[in-house]
Structures are given as structure tokens and as C-alpha cells.
Length: 73
Image (tube, rainbow, N blue to C red; front, top):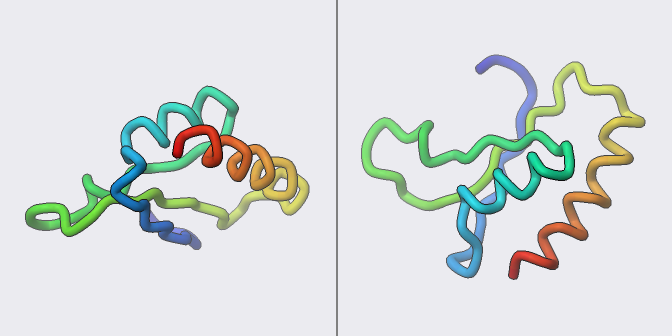
């Protein structure tokens, strides 16, 4: 993937696959990072791609993502 990205590491209290699926359910696009490791995954997290994304889209999505994360802990 090319573009501008931000990686957010997840604590062990959260499951990467569950976070990605739940975000998709609220129309927030995330990618799990475990698939990007060349060897065994050293941790879990999510990749937020924001290159080419309109500012108003980010401003709507971040509060939804923050509220979602509180429900998953």
C-alpha cells in the first residue's frame, strides 16, 4: 500500500480482528497490521490510511472510531 498511514498499536485487551470488523460495521475503514509483518507478528494494531481522504470525512470518522473503541474494551 502506498499513501499516508498511521499505525495504532492495540493493547492486549483488544482483538485486532474484532476492532477492524466493528469499525467496518460503522463505515470506518481500518486494516489490521498483523498481515504486514514479514515474520511472526510482533504485536497487534490497526492501520489508518488518510492520504487522499477529505478532512470532513476524517472529522466525522474519528469520533465514531473513538466511541467504538470505548465499547470494545
